[in-house]
Amino acid sequence: MLKINNLHAWYGPSHILQDVNLEVKKGELVCLIGRNGAGKTTTVKSVAGLIPKVKGSVKFEGEEILGMPAHTRFARGLAYVPEERRIVPGLTVRENIRLGLLASPLRRRESEVIDEIAETFPRLKERLDQAAITMSGGEQQMLAIARAVASKPKFVLLDEPSEGIMPLLVDEMFEYFTALKKSGVTILLIEQNVELALRIADRAYILDQGQVVYQGTAQEMLADQAIQERYCAV
Image (cartoon, rainbow, N blue to C red):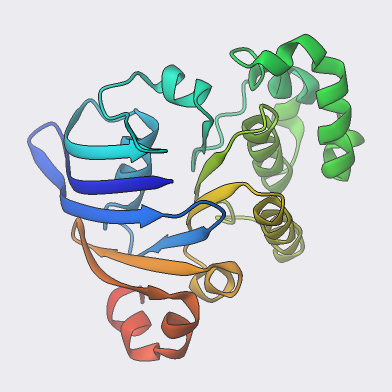
């Protein structure tokens, strides 16, 4: 469903990604792991259309999307949940979710979609008319995810969803990712909690210094402590 070939990306003069190759098949949950600064976020931002200087190929459902603007990629069913959450201050939880529907055909049945989201995320259901910025970090992360999936995307890019979140909410979040995968949504997940991520994933890639240095099944990587310590230990 997603195929990245010979991807290079730059921030100014810094050459961050160097010939990255990876693929995610329809219905898979694939992890992208590695140390801080390895190029993980740059990879998903390149797929989402948020890195200005890139070279190579990114195909989504067989179509080249590397030259497309971010909103066009979103309209094709590619959603992105950023590491920074980007909850909009001054808006309620409901209004933040509505932002995820602005470019979607589902906007015509907005109330119904928000009701569905509220049932999926009970913590948000209780807070729909609360100022989103007043919620806890974990609740804001759930809101960022809810906003991304409100448009019923085919593919979701998740960047460090558990960072700074209390364990109880992390467990809830990962249960939701498993359910999302079972519903047919394909997922590329960046996650520092390697063991937790590998337990729900099908396959994994390790990035180091902007290059893929290892790939395999999640089970293989879970069993290989040496690989984890070499490329993922802080």
